[in-house]
Structures are given as structure tokens and as C-alpha cells.
Image 1 (cartoon, helix red, strand yellow):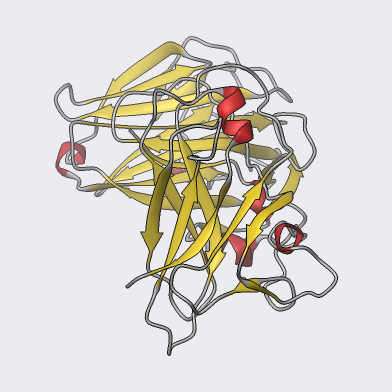
Image 2 (cartoon, rainbow, N blue to C red):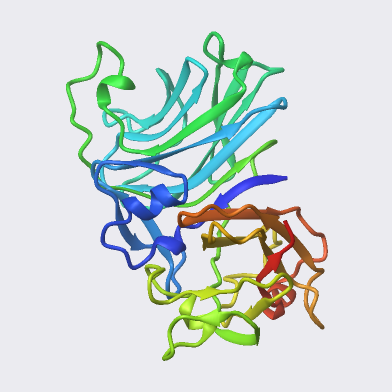
Length: 333
């Protein structure tokens, strides 16, 4: 089951996305920019820059943990870092040989500059290994560093790294690692690699049924929730009545007919300190669409972006997803 997915479209339109990333519980560092995403459709976004990175923590409770992302670089250098307790695994591209490296161990592929590749790492306690997969094909593996198999969590860092943290102490000339790096379509999974994936973020376009208050008199409910970047001061919807809901449709088509691996809702919300309720999110269940799924989240008094993942559903299809209503409601505490 996919534990987490992020296509980064919710940050599109922002010239300074670091505060939005922090609100979504990413930890950004350096200068982060928003660029056109790997999939060419309106609103598609990727993040990156020459000296920026983002990181996020995940639990590791079973045997395997996998994560992956689309990654493009203009010059070879750092790509991804896993921290498992005190142990560290660095994925980087050697600028002399061109090969991907797991710590000091070379792989066999030869990724080129200015082109998207999909990199995945899988760690396993039982085999005590870390495997690298590129574009869905196994590339190389290393033995996990001492202490890694006893870690209870994994910190994933994507993007720029200080070269002194991943380059061998000798054998390569000094380098600043100044190339541009762009990241898209990230997942973390408590199992095997998923293979290359595309994450499509479908924002509301059509009001199907609205019961919440909307702050903007000029904008529909759907438009209020589709601002890029979000405008939580003047373009929001609100309700204080349990059971009230807003339901929407999106005009954005999925990019292909491949199988749907996971679905979820991304929502930025806060609540009044006097309201004793939770935020409910849901999708599907309307006529001709996919099976219904829903969940609730505790909402704090400060704005926070939450990712609600739903279990995979074998009935998900391109047509069903595109026809599915989705939305929010006020849920009982």
C-alpha cells in the first residue's frame, strides 16, 4: 500500500514555495523554485533549483521501505539521501564516469543531463540491502550500513547535498555540485518499488453540491479552492455544522490509461478553537464513478496541508476517476 504520494501541483504558482512546503510538513532548505512538471498538462509542476532540497520523515515498521521520484539534472551530482537512524545512504551521479552511485558503489546505468529519469530505492531488513532501480529496471545494490536495519524510520532528502557528505575522501576532484535539479512524482511505500509513476493532481473545477460558506463573492466554491498558490485569507470555504459538505468535479483528464495505483486528497485547512469537529474528505460513490472512500482528519488552529491517502481499489479506472466527485465535509469529533 502506498504510504504517501506528492506531485507538488499544490505548490504551483508560488514564487517562494518554502513556506507552503513547511505548511505541508516538508522541510525545505535553500532556494526552491517551481517549474513545469514532468507531465505536460496545465498546472503540472515540479520543484527544485541549484542549491535547494526537501526532506520528509516516514516510519519503517516492516521489512521493506521504498521511495521514488522523477529527477532531472543539468549536471551530475547529488540526487537522493536516505537516513536510517545514524546510517546514511547517498544516491548521486558521478561526474567523471557518469554512473549513479550508492555511497561509493557504482551502478551500471548512464543517465544523461536535462532528461527526466525515475529513481527508486528499496531497503530491506531481511536481506540487509539497499537496491537502486532506474526507470523500472534494477541497476545496483549495496549492503546496508551498520545499524540501518534497527532504524524505526527513514528520512528522505531530495535534491542538493553538500558534496563533502557523499563524495569519496579521495579519488575525485573538488566539486561544488551547482547543477539544477528538479523533482516530481514522489512516493514512499511500505513495501516493494512501485515502478515509474505519474501523479496527477485534479483541482476542483465544477461545483456539484455546496453547503459551506465561501469567502469570495466573485468566485465559485471550486475556484476558491483551486488558487495557485492558495489564498487562505480571501479565497476559502468554511462551515461550522456537522454534516455540511461541498462536492466537486474536475475537468482534468488522467494522462494515460495505465492502472491507478493509489488515490488521495490534499487539503489545506484550519479550524476555530471553539469548533469541536473534524474535517472529512471523500471521493467516488456517485453514479458511474469509482467506489466511495472517505476519511477524517484532526484540524489545528493554524493552516496546515494534509495528505489523506486511500487504500488501493481494484475498481479504479481512468473513466471512473474522471467522473468521480470529491470533496470535504464537517465530521463529528
